[in-house]
Length: 69
Image (cartoon, rainbow, N blue to C red; front, side, top):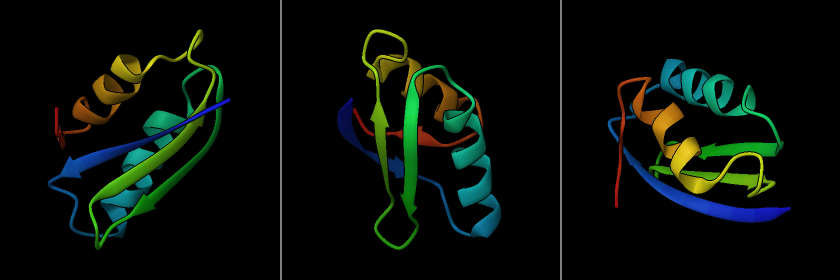
């Protein structure tokens, strides 16, 4: 498993946390998802072969949030 930390803009409440956690957690090869709302960070443990960083970022952006590049 690889640990990746993404800076995510636009998250402001628990609904945002649930939306991101559910979207990322439903991807294949995800071990864990932790959202730090105050810092705007999403930490994901994942299998890079099944869910590369680009796929994770896309799942977050599909929920209406911006992932810093």
